Length: 287
Length: 352
Image 1 (cartoon, each protein chain N blue to C red):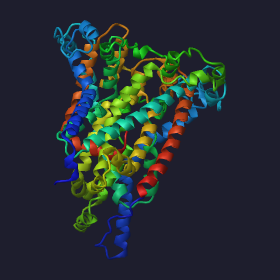
Image 2 (image 1 turned 180 degrees about the vertical axis):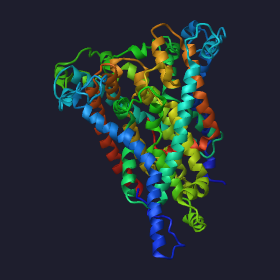
Image 3 (image 1 turned 45 degrees about the vertical axis):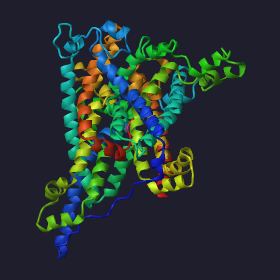
Image 4 (image 1 turned 30 degrees about the vertical axis):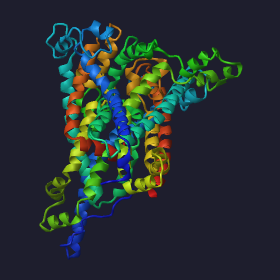
Protein backbone atom coordinates (compact mmCIF):
# COMPACT_ATOMS: atom_id res chain seq x y z
CA UNK A 1 0.00 0.00 0.00
CA UNK A 2 1.61 3.18 -1.14
CA UNK A 3 0.40 6.04 0.98
CA UNK A 4 1.74 9.49 1.44
CA UNK A 5 3.16 8.26 4.77
CA UNK A 6 5.77 6.17 2.93
CA UNK A 7 7.56 9.39 2.06
CA UNK A 8 8.52 10.09 5.66
CA UNK A 9 12.31 10.35 5.58
CA UNK A 10 14.37 7.44 6.88
CA UNK A 11 16.10 9.60 9.50
CA UNK A 12 12.78 10.08 11.18
CA UNK A 13 12.17 6.38 11.43
CA UNK A 14 15.68 5.99 12.80
CA UNK A 15 14.95 8.65 15.41
CA UNK A 16 11.79 6.74 16.32
CA UNK A 17 13.81 3.63 17.06
CA UNK A 18 16.34 5.57 19.13
CA UNK A 19 13.59 7.09 21.27
CA UNK A 20 11.83 3.73 21.68
CA UNK A 21 15.09 2.01 22.65
CA UNK A 22 15.87 4.73 25.19
CA UNK A 23 12.50 4.23 26.83
CA UNK A 24 12.82 0.44 26.72
CA UNK A 25 16.09 0.85 28.64
CA UNK A 26 14.35 3.09 31.15
CA UNK A 27 11.56 0.56 31.67
CA UNK A 28 13.70 -2.58 31.77
CA UNK A 29 16.96 -1.16 33.17
CA UNK A 30 15.85 -1.39 36.81
CA UNK A 31 15.17 -5.12 36.35
CA UNK A 32 18.65 -5.63 34.86
CA UNK A 33 20.26 -3.78 37.78
CA UNK A 34 18.12 -5.90 40.12
CA UNK A 35 19.34 -9.13 38.51
CA UNK A 36 22.99 -8.02 38.55
CA UNK A 37 22.78 -6.86 42.18
CA UNK A 38 21.48 -10.24 43.34
CA UNK A 39 24.83 -11.74 42.27
CA UNK A 40 26.91 -9.12 44.04
CA UNK A 41 28.47 -9.05 47.48
CA UNK A 42 26.94 -6.56 49.94
CA UNK A 43 29.95 -4.28 49.54
CA UNK A 44 29.89 -4.43 45.75
CA UNK A 45 26.14 -3.70 45.71
CA UNK A 46 26.63 -0.62 47.87
CA UNK A 47 29.78 0.59 46.12
CA UNK A 48 28.95 -0.03 42.46
CA UNK A 49 25.19 0.37 42.32
CA UNK A 50 25.12 1.12 38.61
CA UNK A 51 27.41 -1.63 37.36
CA UNK A 52 25.69 -4.49 35.54
CA UNK A 53 28.69 -6.79 36.08
CA UNK A 54 29.05 -8.25 39.57
CA UNK A 55 32.66 -8.07 40.72
CA UNK A 56 33.22 -10.59 42.21
CA UNK A 57 30.31 -12.80 41.22
CA UNK A 58 28.73 -14.05 44.43
CA UNK A 59 25.93 -16.56 44.87
CA UNK A 60 25.74 -16.01 48.61
CA UNK A 61 22.46 -14.10 48.32
CA UNK A 62 20.88 -16.94 46.35
CA UNK A 63 22.21 -19.50 48.83
CA UNK A 64 20.48 -17.60 51.60
CA UNK A 65 17.26 -17.34 49.60
CA UNK A 66 17.17 -21.07 48.88
CA UNK A 67 18.18 -21.92 52.46
CA UNK A 68 21.59 -23.47 51.62
CA UNK A 69 23.40 -21.09 53.91
CA UNK A 70 24.03 -21.24 57.65
CA UNK A 71 23.10 -17.60 58.31
CA UNK A 72 19.77 -17.85 56.54
CA UNK A 73 17.09 -15.72 58.15
CA UNK A 74 15.20 -15.46 54.86
CA UNK A 75 12.20 -17.79 55.14
CA UNK A 76 11.66 -17.62 51.39
CA UNK A 77 10.23 -21.15 51.21
CA UNK A 78 7.50 -20.30 53.69
CA UNK A 79 6.64 -17.06 51.88
CA UNK A 80 6.46 -18.92 48.59
CA UNK A 81 4.28 -21.69 50.06
CA UNK A 82 1.89 -19.17 51.63
CA UNK A 83 1.63 -17.09 48.46
CA UNK A 84 0.96 -20.24 46.44
CA UNK A 85 -1.72 -21.57 48.80
CA UNK A 86 -3.51 -18.27 49.16
CA UNK A 87 -3.32 -17.22 45.50
CA UNK A 88 -4.50 -20.63 44.29
CA UNK A 89 -7.51 -20.71 46.61
CA UNK A 90 -8.48 -17.12 45.79
CA UNK A 91 -8.14 -17.76 42.05
CA UNK A 92 -10.22 -20.95 42.10
CA UNK A 93 -12.85 -19.26 44.25
CA UNK A 94 -13.02 -16.18 42.07
CA UNK A 95 -13.30 -18.08 38.81
CA UNK A 96 -16.12 -20.26 40.10
CA UNK A 97 -18.09 -17.72 42.15
CA UNK A 98 -17.61 -14.81 39.71
CA UNK A 99 -18.81 -16.95 36.81
CA UNK A 100 -21.83 -18.22 38.77
CA UNK A 101 -22.87 -14.69 39.66
CA UNK A 102 -22.00 -13.38 36.20
CA UNK A 103 -24.15 -16.06 34.59
CA UNK A 104 -27.11 -15.32 36.84
CA UNK A 105 -26.85 -11.60 36.11
CA UNK A 106 -26.56 -12.20 32.38
CA UNK A 107 -29.17 -14.91 31.88
CA UNK A 108 -31.36 -15.89 34.81
CA UNK A 109 -34.53 -14.04 35.71
CA UNK A 110 -34.99 -13.77 39.44
CA UNK A 111 -36.67 -11.33 41.76
CA UNK A 112 -34.18 -8.73 43.01
CA UNK A 113 -31.74 -9.11 40.13
CA UNK A 114 -31.59 -5.36 39.65
CA UNK A 115 -30.83 -4.89 43.34
CA UNK A 116 -27.96 -7.41 43.20
CA UNK A 117 -26.63 -5.73 40.07
CA UNK A 118 -26.54 -2.34 41.80
CA UNK A 119 -24.99 -3.81 44.95
CA UNK A 120 -22.12 -5.23 42.93
CA UNK A 121 -21.72 -2.08 40.87
CA UNK A 122 -21.73 -0.09 44.13
CA UNK A 123 -18.98 -2.08 45.85
CA UNK A 124 -16.89 -1.95 42.66
CA UNK A 125 -15.85 1.61 43.44
CA UNK A 126 -14.98 1.08 47.11
CA UNK A 127 -11.23 1.67 47.30
CA UNK A 128 -9.04 -0.94 48.98
CA UNK A 129 -7.29 1.55 51.24
CA UNK A 130 -10.63 2.53 52.75
CA UNK A 131 -11.22 -1.13 53.67
CA UNK A 132 -7.99 -1.67 55.62
CA UNK A 133 -9.28 -0.88 59.11
CA UNK A 134 -12.86 -2.09 58.37
CA UNK A 135 -11.70 -5.53 57.20
CA UNK A 136 -9.36 -5.85 60.17
CA UNK A 137 -12.38 -5.17 62.41
CA UNK A 138 -14.55 -7.82 60.79
CA UNK A 139 -11.78 -10.44 60.79
CA UNK A 140 -11.25 -9.83 64.51
CA UNK A 141 -14.97 -10.05 65.25
CA UNK A 142 -15.23 -13.35 63.34
CA UNK A 143 -12.00 -14.70 64.94
CA UNK A 144 -10.48 -15.03 61.46
CA UNK A 145 -7.51 -12.73 62.14
CA UNK A 146 -4.24 -14.59 61.50
CA UNK A 147 -5.83 -17.51 59.64
CA UNK A 148 -5.67 -18.70 56.04
CA UNK A 149 -9.48 -18.48 55.88
CA UNK A 150 -9.27 -14.83 56.86
CA UNK A 151 -6.74 -14.14 54.12
CA UNK A 152 -8.79 -15.91 51.44
CA UNK A 153 -12.53 -15.46 52.07
CA UNK A 154 -12.74 -11.64 52.02
CA UNK A 155 -11.18 -11.37 48.55
CA UNK A 156 -12.53 -14.61 47.08
CA UNK A 157 -15.16 -12.71 45.10
CA UNK A 158 -14.51 -9.56 43.14
CA UNK A 159 -17.01 -7.28 41.53
CA UNK A 160 -14.84 -6.57 38.47
CA UNK A 161 -14.55 -10.31 37.73
CA UNK A 162 -18.32 -10.72 37.97
CA UNK A 163 -18.81 -7.98 35.39
CA UNK A 164 -16.20 -9.43 33.06
CA UNK A 165 -17.90 -12.86 33.21
CA UNK A 166 -21.34 -11.31 32.72
CA UNK A 167 -20.06 -9.58 29.59
CA UNK A 168 -18.80 -12.90 28.16
CA UNK A 169 -22.04 -14.75 29.00
CA UNK A 170 -24.10 -12.05 27.27
CA UNK A 171 -22.29 -12.85 24.01
CA UNK A 172 -23.37 -16.52 24.00
CA UNK A 173 -26.46 -16.95 21.75
CA UNK A 174 -29.60 -17.68 23.75
CA UNK A 175 -30.55 -20.46 21.32
CA UNK A 176 -27.77 -22.68 22.72
CA UNK A 177 -29.43 -22.77 26.11
CA UNK A 178 -32.90 -23.19 24.68
CA UNK A 179 -31.77 -26.35 22.95
CA UNK A 180 -30.31 -27.67 26.19
CA UNK A 181 -33.54 -26.90 28.05
CA UNK A 182 -35.61 -28.76 25.48
CA UNK A 183 -33.39 -31.76 26.11
CA UNK A 184 -34.39 -31.47 29.75
CA UNK A 185 -31.16 -30.13 31.25
CA UNK A 186 -31.54 -28.25 34.54
CA UNK A 187 -30.24 -24.72 35.11
CA UNK A 188 -26.96 -25.77 36.73
CA UNK A 189 -26.29 -28.47 34.12
CA UNK A 190 -26.95 -26.01 31.31
CA UNK A 191 -24.53 -23.57 32.88
CA UNK A 192 -21.85 -26.09 33.77
CA UNK A 193 -21.84 -28.40 30.76
CA UNK A 194 -23.06 -26.19 27.91
CA UNK A 195 -22.42 -22.48 28.48
CA UNK A 196 -19.29 -22.48 30.64
CA UNK A 197 -17.15 -24.27 28.02
CA UNK A 198 -18.23 -21.61 25.53
CA UNK A 199 -16.79 -18.72 27.56
CA UNK A 200 -13.30 -20.17 27.96
CA UNK A 201 -11.62 -16.84 27.01
CA UNK A 202 -13.55 -15.15 29.83
CA UNK A 203 -12.52 -17.81 32.33
CA UNK A 204 -8.90 -17.45 31.27
CA UNK A 205 -9.06 -13.67 31.66
CA UNK A 206 -10.55 -13.86 35.15
CA UNK A 207 -8.11 -16.62 36.17
CA UNK A 208 -5.11 -14.55 35.16
CA UNK A 209 -6.35 -11.31 36.71
CA UNK A 210 -7.26 -13.14 39.93
CA UNK A 211 -3.92 -14.91 40.19
CA UNK A 212 -1.93 -11.78 39.43
CA UNK A 213 -4.02 -9.74 41.86
CA UNK A 214 -3.79 -12.19 44.75
CA UNK A 215 -0.10 -12.98 44.15
CA UNK A 216 0.74 -9.26 44.27
CA UNK A 217 -1.75 -8.41 47.06
CA UNK A 218 -0.07 -6.54 49.86
CA UNK A 219 -2.17 -4.12 51.91
CA UNK A 220 -4.97 -6.58 52.68
CA UNK A 221 -2.59 -9.30 53.92
CA UNK A 222 -0.84 -6.64 55.96
CA UNK A 223 -4.00 -6.02 58.01
CA UNK A 224 -5.29 -9.63 57.95
CA UNK A 225 -2.20 -11.15 59.58
CA UNK A 226 0.59 -10.28 61.97
CA UNK A 227 1.98 -13.76 62.65
CA UNK A 228 5.16 -14.48 60.59
CA UNK A 229 3.65 -17.92 59.99
CA UNK A 230 1.28 -16.34 57.48
CA UNK A 231 3.76 -14.09 55.69
CA UNK A 232 3.44 -14.13 51.90
CA UNK A 233 6.06 -13.04 49.39
CA UNK A 234 4.76 -9.48 49.60
CA UNK A 235 4.30 -9.04 53.35
CA UNK A 236 7.37 -11.16 54.13
CA UNK A 237 9.62 -9.20 51.78
CA UNK A 238 8.28 -5.88 53.03
CA UNK A 239 8.89 -6.73 56.70
CA UNK A 240 12.28 -8.26 55.94
CA UNK A 241 13.46 -5.21 54.03
CA UNK A 242 12.23 -2.66 56.59
CA UNK A 243 13.81 -4.73 59.36
CA UNK A 244 17.13 -5.15 57.61
CA UNK A 245 17.59 -1.63 56.37
CA UNK A 246 18.72 -0.44 59.79
CA UNK A 247 20.99 -3.45 60.26
CA UNK A 248 23.05 -2.62 57.17
CA UNK A 249 22.56 -3.28 53.51
CA UNK A 250 21.29 -6.67 52.46
CA UNK A 251 20.34 -5.52 49.00
CA UNK A 252 21.53 -8.63 47.11
CA UNK A 253 19.20 -10.83 49.17
CA UNK A 254 16.26 -8.43 49.10
CA UNK A 255 16.48 -7.77 45.38
CA UNK A 256 17.06 -11.43 44.53
CA UNK A 257 14.02 -12.50 46.52
CA UNK A 258 11.95 -9.72 44.96
CA UNK A 259 13.05 -10.85 41.51
CA UNK A 260 12.19 -14.46 42.25
CA UNK A 261 8.74 -13.45 43.50
CA UNK A 262 8.11 -11.69 40.17
CA UNK A 263 8.99 -14.68 37.98
CA UNK A 264 5.69 -16.63 38.16
CA UNK A 265 3.76 -13.52 37.09
CA UNK A 266 6.32 -12.80 34.36
CA UNK A 267 5.91 -16.33 32.94
CA UNK A 268 2.12 -16.01 33.00
CA UNK A 269 2.44 -12.63 31.31
CA UNK A 270 4.54 -13.94 28.44
CA UNK A 271 2.20 -16.90 27.92
CA UNK A 272 -1.06 -14.97 28.11
CA UNK A 273 -0.24 -11.42 27.08
CA UNK A 274 -3.55 -10.98 25.30
CA UNK A 275 -5.61 -11.86 28.36
CA UNK A 276 -3.53 -9.51 30.52
CA UNK A 277 -4.11 -6.69 28.10
CA UNK A 278 -7.77 -7.46 27.42
CA UNK A 279 -8.56 -7.92 31.10
CA UNK A 280 -6.86 -4.67 32.02
CA UNK A 281 -8.80 -2.77 29.38
CA UNK A 282 -12.17 -4.16 30.37
CA UNK A 283 -11.66 -4.35 34.11
CA UNK A 284 -10.33 -0.86 34.66
CA UNK A 285 -7.19 -0.01 36.55
CA UNK A 286 -6.24 -0.83 40.08
CA UNK A 287 -3.56 1.36 41.69
CA UNK B 1 -24.87 0.04 31.76
CA UNK B 2 -28.30 -1.49 31.91
CA UNK B 3 -29.53 -4.85 33.03
CA UNK B 4 -30.17 -6.99 30.02
CA UNK B 5 -33.61 -8.53 30.12
CA UNK B 6 -32.58 -11.33 27.83
CA UNK B 7 -33.22 -14.68 29.37
CA UNK B 8 -34.02 -18.21 28.48
CA UNK B 9 -37.62 -18.52 27.39
CA UNK B 10 -38.98 -21.99 27.99
CA UNK B 11 -40.25 -22.71 24.49
CA UNK B 12 -41.34 -26.26 25.17
CA UNK B 13 -43.79 -25.37 27.87
CA UNK B 14 -47.20 -25.01 26.36
CA UNK B 15 -49.17 -25.37 29.56
CA UNK B 16 -49.44 -22.66 32.18
CA UNK B 17 -48.45 -24.85 35.12
CA UNK B 18 -45.19 -25.97 33.60
CA UNK B 19 -44.25 -22.45 32.63
CA UNK B 20 -44.72 -21.07 36.12
CA UNK B 21 -42.83 -24.05 37.52
CA UNK B 22 -39.94 -23.26 35.19
CA UNK B 23 -40.14 -19.63 36.27
CA UNK B 24 -39.96 -20.65 39.90
CA UNK B 25 -36.98 -22.91 39.25
CA UNK B 26 -35.19 -20.12 37.44
CA UNK B 27 -35.89 -17.73 40.29
CA UNK B 28 -34.46 -20.18 42.80
CA UNK B 29 -31.45 -20.95 40.60
CA UNK B 30 -30.75 -17.24 40.15
CA UNK B 31 -30.55 -16.67 43.89
CA UNK B 32 -28.48 -19.80 44.39
CA UNK B 33 -26.02 -18.62 41.77
CA UNK B 34 -25.55 -15.12 43.16
CA UNK B 35 -25.79 -15.93 46.86
CA UNK B 36 -22.12 -16.85 47.48
CA UNK B 37 -21.02 -13.60 45.86
CA UNK B 38 -23.68 -11.56 47.62
CA UNK B 39 -22.91 -13.12 51.02
CA UNK B 40 -19.15 -12.60 50.71
CA UNK B 41 -19.44 -9.06 49.38
CA UNK B 42 -21.90 -8.16 52.12
CA UNK B 43 -19.88 -9.77 54.89
CA UNK B 44 -16.47 -8.42 53.84
CA UNK B 45 -17.35 -5.16 52.12
CA UNK B 46 -20.69 -3.77 53.28
CA UNK B 47 -20.58 -4.89 56.92
CA UNK B 48 -16.94 -3.75 57.42
CA UNK B 49 -17.84 -0.31 56.16
CA UNK B 50 -20.82 -0.02 58.52
CA UNK B 51 -18.72 -1.33 61.39
CA UNK B 52 -15.90 1.07 60.60
CA UNK B 53 -18.32 3.96 60.47
CA UNK B 54 -19.41 3.09 64.00
CA UNK B 55 -15.75 2.83 65.08
CA UNK B 56 -15.01 6.22 63.53
CA UNK B 57 -17.43 7.63 66.12
CA UNK B 58 -15.52 6.04 69.01
CA UNK B 59 -12.17 6.06 70.74
CA UNK B 60 -10.99 2.47 70.43
CA UNK B 61 -7.55 0.87 70.87
CA UNK B 62 -8.08 -2.15 68.60
CA UNK B 63 -7.41 -4.69 71.33
CA UNK B 64 -10.85 -5.45 72.73
CA UNK B 65 -14.05 -5.84 70.74
CA UNK B 66 -15.36 -2.42 69.71
CA UNK B 67 -18.75 -3.44 71.16
CA UNK B 68 -17.44 -4.61 74.53
CA UNK B 69 -17.87 -1.22 76.14
CA UNK B 70 -14.15 -0.48 76.13
CA UNK B 71 -14.62 1.67 73.07
CA UNK B 72 -15.93 5.05 74.15
CA UNK B 73 -18.56 6.67 71.93
CA UNK B 74 -17.35 10.17 71.13
CA UNK B 75 -19.74 11.27 68.37
CA UNK B 76 -18.10 13.33 65.66
CA UNK B 77 -15.00 14.14 67.75
CA UNK B 78 -12.61 12.26 65.46
CA UNK B 79 -13.85 14.14 62.41
CA UNK B 80 -13.70 17.42 64.30
CA UNK B 81 -10.10 16.71 65.32
CA UNK B 82 -9.20 16.15 61.69
CA UNK B 83 -11.01 19.13 60.22
CA UNK B 84 -11.96 21.58 62.97
CA UNK B 85 -9.63 21.71 65.98
CA UNK B 86 -6.28 23.39 65.41
CA UNK B 87 -4.04 20.78 67.05
CA UNK B 88 -1.61 18.01 66.19
CA UNK B 89 -4.15 15.65 64.60
CA UNK B 90 -5.30 18.27 62.10
CA UNK B 91 -1.74 19.37 61.41
CA UNK B 92 -0.64 15.80 60.56
CA UNK B 93 -3.76 15.18 58.49
CA UNK B 94 -3.46 18.41 56.52
CA UNK B 95 0.21 17.74 55.89
CA UNK B 96 -0.72 14.33 54.45
CA UNK B 97 -3.39 15.97 52.28
CA UNK B 98 -0.78 18.42 51.00
CA UNK B 99 1.68 15.60 50.25
CA UNK B 100 -0.95 13.63 48.38
CA UNK B 101 -2.15 16.72 46.51
CA UNK B 102 1.31 17.33 45.06
CA UNK B 103 1.63 13.62 44.32
CA UNK B 104 -1.58 13.75 42.23
CA UNK B 105 -0.55 17.05 40.65
CA UNK B 106 2.66 15.54 39.30
CA UNK B 107 1.81 11.88 38.68
CA UNK B 108 -1.40 12.35 36.69
CA UNK B 109 -0.08 14.73 33.99
CA UNK B 110 3.27 12.93 33.77
CA UNK B 111 1.87 9.42 33.41
CA UNK B 112 -0.82 10.59 30.97
CA UNK B 113 1.67 12.46 28.78
CA UNK B 114 4.17 9.61 28.82
CA UNK B 115 1.49 7.01 28.05
CA UNK B 116 0.14 9.07 25.16
CA UNK B 117 3.63 9.73 23.80
CA UNK B 118 4.57 6.04 23.85
CA UNK B 119 1.26 5.02 22.30
CA UNK B 120 1.66 7.49 19.43
CA UNK B 121 5.22 6.26 18.83
CA UNK B 122 4.06 2.65 18.76
CA UNK B 123 1.13 3.42 16.51
CA UNK B 124 3.45 4.24 13.60
CA UNK B 125 2.65 1.69 10.92
CA UNK B 126 6.16 1.62 9.52
CA UNK B 127 8.00 0.61 12.68
CA UNK B 128 9.04 -2.99 13.20
CA UNK B 129 9.30 -4.83 16.52
CA UNK B 130 6.44 -2.89 18.04
CA UNK B 131 5.23 -5.89 20.05
CA UNK B 132 8.60 -6.11 21.78
CA UNK B 133 8.58 -2.46 22.81
CA UNK B 134 4.96 -2.66 23.94
CA UNK B 135 5.84 -5.61 26.16
CA UNK B 136 8.82 -3.74 27.62
CA UNK B 137 6.72 -0.68 28.46
CA UNK B 138 3.87 -2.71 29.93
CA UNK B 139 5.97 -5.14 31.97
CA UNK B 140 6.44 -2.94 35.09
CA UNK B 141 2.63 -2.65 35.39
CA UNK B 142 2.14 -6.35 36.11
CA UNK B 143 4.78 -6.74 38.82
CA UNK B 144 4.02 -6.42 42.50
CA UNK B 145 4.19 -3.00 44.12
CA UNK B 146 6.38 -4.50 46.84
CA UNK B 147 9.00 -5.89 44.44
CA UNK B 148 9.32 -2.71 42.37
CA UNK B 149 9.34 -0.47 45.43
CA UNK B 150 12.31 -2.41 46.80
CA UNK B 151 14.11 -1.95 43.48
CA UNK B 152 13.46 1.80 43.54
CA UNK B 153 14.63 2.06 47.16
CA UNK B 154 17.90 0.54 45.96
CA UNK B 155 18.16 2.79 42.89
CA UNK B 156 17.57 5.97 44.91
CA UNK B 157 19.75 5.42 47.97
CA UNK B 158 22.52 7.90 48.71
CA UNK B 159 25.11 5.84 46.84
CA UNK B 160 22.50 4.40 44.47
CA UNK B 161 22.40 3.97 40.73
CA UNK B 162 20.56 7.24 40.11
CA UNK B 163 23.14 9.31 41.97
CA UNK B 164 25.89 7.43 40.12
CA UNK B 165 24.32 8.55 36.83
CA UNK B 166 23.98 12.11 38.12
CA UNK B 167 27.62 12.18 39.23
CA UNK B 168 28.63 11.34 35.65
CA UNK B 169 27.39 14.78 34.67
CA UNK B 170 28.83 16.40 37.77
CA UNK B 171 25.70 16.63 39.90
CA UNK B 172 25.75 15.47 43.48
CA UNK B 173 22.38 13.85 44.06
CA UNK B 174 20.55 14.10 47.40
CA UNK B 175 19.89 11.25 49.80
CA UNK B 176 16.52 10.96 48.12
CA UNK B 177 14.24 9.00 50.41
CA UNK B 178 15.51 10.64 53.59
CA UNK B 179 15.16 14.15 52.18
CA UNK B 180 11.99 15.92 53.30
CA UNK B 181 12.72 19.34 51.80
CA UNK B 182 10.01 20.67 49.49
CA UNK B 183 11.02 21.01 45.85
CA UNK B 184 9.33 24.42 45.39
CA UNK B 185 11.11 25.67 48.52
CA UNK B 186 14.39 24.50 47.00
CA UNK B 187 13.71 26.36 43.78
CA UNK B 188 12.80 29.52 45.71
CA UNK B 189 15.94 29.19 47.80
CA UNK B 190 17.95 29.03 44.59
CA UNK B 191 16.63 32.46 43.57
CA UNK B 192 17.25 33.89 47.02
CA UNK B 193 13.96 33.36 48.87
CA UNK B 194 15.09 31.37 51.90
CA UNK B 195 12.27 31.92 54.33
CA UNK B 196 8.57 32.56 54.28
CA UNK B 197 7.64 36.16 53.38
CA UNK B 198 5.24 37.82 55.81
CA UNK B 199 2.01 36.95 54.01
CA UNK B 200 2.97 33.27 53.84
CA UNK B 201 3.37 33.00 57.60
CA UNK B 202 -0.39 33.09 58.09
CA UNK B 203 -1.96 29.77 58.79
CA UNK B 204 -4.69 28.02 56.85
CA UNK B 205 -6.01 24.76 58.32
CA UNK B 206 -3.06 24.41 60.73
CA UNK B 207 -0.40 24.79 58.02
CA UNK B 208 1.22 28.08 57.04
CA UNK B 209 0.79 29.15 53.44
CA UNK B 210 4.53 28.66 53.09
CA UNK B 211 4.08 25.00 54.07
CA UNK B 212 1.14 24.55 51.71
CA UNK B 213 3.26 25.86 48.84
CA UNK B 214 6.27 23.63 49.54
CA UNK B 215 5.77 21.41 46.52
CA UNK B 216 6.41 17.66 46.75
CA UNK B 217 9.30 16.66 49.00
CA UNK B 218 12.44 15.25 47.44
CA UNK B 219 11.47 11.86 48.92
CA UNK B 220 8.02 12.12 47.32
CA UNK B 221 9.68 12.69 43.92
CA UNK B 222 11.04 9.14 44.12
CA UNK B 223 7.54 7.77 44.67
CA UNK B 224 6.23 9.98 41.86
CA UNK B 225 8.86 8.50 39.52
CA UNK B 226 8.09 4.98 40.72
CA UNK B 227 4.35 5.30 40.15
CA UNK B 228 4.71 6.99 36.76
CA UNK B 229 7.08 4.20 35.76
CA UNK B 230 4.69 1.43 36.85
CA UNK B 231 1.38 2.79 35.57
CA UNK B 232 2.25 4.44 32.26
CA UNK B 233 2.23 1.06 30.50
CA UNK B 234 -1.39 0.36 31.36
CA UNK B 235 -2.57 3.76 30.19
CA UNK B 236 -0.43 3.42 27.06
CA UNK B 237 -2.47 0.31 26.19
CA UNK B 238 -5.70 2.30 26.53
CA UNK B 239 -4.38 4.99 24.19
CA UNK B 240 -3.12 2.37 21.74
CA UNK B 241 -6.53 0.69 21.61
CA UNK B 242 -8.13 4.06 20.92
CA UNK B 243 -5.54 5.03 18.29
CA UNK B 244 -6.09 1.78 16.45
CA UNK B 245 -9.76 2.67 16.26
CA UNK B 246 -9.01 5.82 14.24
CA UNK B 247 -9.25 5.01 10.56
CA UNK B 248 -6.06 5.64 8.55
CA UNK B 249 -8.03 7.47 5.87
CA UNK B 250 -8.82 10.34 8.20
CA UNK B 251 -5.16 10.87 8.99
CA UNK B 252 -4.13 10.41 5.39
CA UNK B 253 -6.64 12.98 4.23
CA UNK B 254 -4.97 15.52 6.46
CA UNK B 255 -1.60 14.48 5.05
CA UNK B 256 -2.82 15.39 1.57
CA UNK B 257 -3.93 18.75 2.87
CA UNK B 258 -0.30 19.40 3.65
CA UNK B 259 -0.55 19.25 7.42
CA UNK B 260 2.66 18.65 9.36
CA UNK B 261 2.87 15.70 11.71
CA UNK B 262 2.39 17.94 14.73
CA UNK B 263 -0.63 19.69 13.17
CA UNK B 264 -2.13 16.32 12.31
CA UNK B 265 -1.68 15.13 15.88
CA UNK B 266 -3.07 18.29 17.46
CA UNK B 267 -5.98 18.91 15.09
CA UNK B 268 -7.02 15.41 14.03
CA UNK B 269 -5.75 12.72 16.40
CA UNK B 270 -6.03 14.46 19.77
CA UNK B 271 -9.70 15.49 19.44
CA UNK B 272 -10.57 11.89 18.54
CA UNK B 273 -8.76 10.65 21.64
CA UNK B 274 -10.76 12.94 23.92
CA UNK B 275 -12.91 10.21 25.54
CA UNK B 276 -9.86 8.06 26.29
CA UNK B 277 -7.92 11.04 27.55
CA UNK B 278 -10.72 11.89 29.98
CA UNK B 279 -10.92 8.26 31.13
CA UNK B 280 -7.16 8.08 31.73
CA UNK B 281 -7.12 11.39 33.60
CA UNK B 282 -10.01 10.53 35.90
CA UNK B 283 -8.81 6.98 36.58
CA UNK B 284 -5.42 8.50 37.35
CA UNK B 285 -6.82 11.01 39.83
CA UNK B 286 -8.91 8.32 41.55
CA UNK B 287 -6.01 5.89 41.96
CA UNK B 288 -3.39 8.46 43.00
CA UNK B 289 -5.52 9.59 45.96
CA UNK B 290 -5.29 6.00 47.22
CA UNK B 291 -1.52 5.58 47.15
CA UNK B 292 -0.48 3.32 50.04
CA UNK B 293 1.85 0.39 49.25
CA UNK B 294 4.71 2.53 47.96
CA UNK B 295 4.42 4.93 50.91
CA UNK B 296 4.47 2.07 53.40
CA UNK B 297 7.50 0.49 51.77
CA UNK B 298 9.65 3.58 51.38
CA UNK B 299 9.71 4.07 55.11
CA UNK B 300 8.34 6.38 57.67
CA UNK B 301 9.15 9.83 56.31
CA UNK B 302 6.55 12.44 57.38
CA UNK B 303 7.19 14.20 54.08
CA UNK B 304 5.71 11.28 52.12
CA UNK B 305 2.82 10.57 54.48
CA UNK B 306 -0.53 10.40 52.65
CA UNK B 307 -4.06 10.16 54.10
CA UNK B 308 -4.32 6.46 53.17
CA UNK B 309 -1.08 5.70 54.99
CA UNK B 310 -1.99 7.98 57.90
CA UNK B 311 -5.29 6.13 58.32
CA UNK B 312 -3.38 2.85 58.56
CA UNK B 313 -0.69 4.11 60.91
CA UNK B 314 -3.09 5.94 63.25
CA UNK B 315 -4.85 2.60 63.65
CA UNK B 316 -2.11 0.02 63.64
CA UNK B 317 0.85 2.03 65.00
CA UNK B 318 -0.87 4.48 67.36
CA UNK B 319 -3.83 2.29 68.38
CA UNK B 320 -6.15 5.15 67.44
CA UNK B 321 -8.53 3.09 65.31
CA UNK B 322 -11.38 5.57 65.63
CA UNK B 323 -9.26 8.34 64.17
CA UNK B 324 -7.88 6.02 61.48
CA UNK B 325 -11.39 4.94 60.47
CA UNK B 326 -12.47 8.58 60.30
CA UNK B 327 -9.60 9.34 57.90
CA UNK B 328 -10.61 6.32 55.81
CA UNK B 329 -14.13 7.75 55.54
CA UNK B 330 -12.83 11.12 54.44
CA UNK B 331 -10.83 9.40 51.67
CA UNK B 332 -13.93 7.38 50.82
CA UNK B 333 -16.01 10.54 50.46
CA UNK B 334 -13.39 12.03 48.18
CA UNK B 335 -13.18 8.90 46.01
CA UNK B 336 -16.97 8.64 45.74
CA UNK B 337 -17.12 12.25 44.59
CA UNK B 338 -14.33 11.69 42.07
CA UNK B 339 -15.96 8.49 40.77
CA UNK B 340 -19.25 10.31 40.31
CA UNK B 341 -17.46 12.99 38.32
CA UNK B 342 -15.68 10.32 36.29
CA UNK B 343 -18.92 8.47 35.44
CA UNK B 344 -20.46 11.77 34.39
CA UNK B 345 -17.51 13.01 32.34
CA UNK B 346 -16.62 9.73 30.68
CA UNK B 347 -20.27 8.81 30.23
CA UNK B 348 -20.90 11.86 28.04
CA UNK B 349 -17.65 11.21 26.20
CA UNK B 350 -18.80 7.77 25.13
CA UNK B 351 -22.10 8.96 23.77
CA UNK B 352 -20.77 10.81 20.76
